[in-house]
Length: 424
Image (tube, rainbow, N blue to C red; front, top):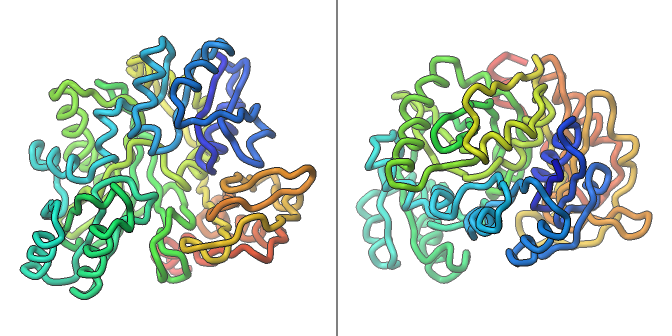
């Protein structure tokens, strides 16, 4: 197959890295790619928001299969446009992608299908949202309804903090994404993620992971797009795993199919493990970032036929095999992230960071001749395998410490919950 991967982040580098290993692959392109993806694919300077240009490239290059990475292009309907032009595409439809594009849409589906989730209210005016807040009190969760690059959620521990978050949303802090606000009850428990491939009818459960959203050690600081992750997440026991499939995943798949908008792609369920069982926090309609990095490192199976079967409704009978190891990734970000940060700092020493157990995926990088420059907030994903979370963590940080980038920072405690649980 001639394959085009859409995107430029660490998720897309990890997908391209894994797809590049497939015996079914004849040529791999990535648009637009980044400073690291050129090692596994041909970077293409395409404007991925110009769907006609993407289709024209597919026609010119005789692409057999398109894999869409970013949430914005899922929600913008790139998958629909590529399929309409006659190409197989791994990407949910725009209609099904509302699972991520609108938190209110997902909440309504949960109500309809009896999926356990947080109690909530949905508001399109500041006055109504504030009135609801004052009846509920704190702690409480404020969410911009639409896509906000992982930053539209405030877990408010006080009414004042919640009030400020609501005012920010309606004042345009997240653009159109904040035109509606969802206010949820605060759920006590531990968050974990479950990934499932779905071809519209059948599902293939993948694996679990635990992300670290806060910017600084000890889960402090502002929410980010993710500062690290590990997989699998042992807190997701086989019993909880099965309960999640039965009460969350299957009702979602059946509910969307019954509406005439079957889901074809990867379902990424963010879950809260509460005292009364797993409850849905939110859905993402694409692979996670940075969870993809740890998943691809752990996956023994060829990923390309799995993605293609998902896209073409032929997932039944497929299976997936995982390495009997843990994977852990540490995000190196530019100082200042997730707020304002400088671009263009030079990164050195990457050639020393990788090893038999360590893979460095690029996110916000670009090449300038022989120099590698930081071009984004989250810049590098130092990802390692180990026989335990502790060993994977030690190997990842050993890789981090070989990278010469004074303008970067990372958390030093990725995996801390599992280490604390096991007394390490």
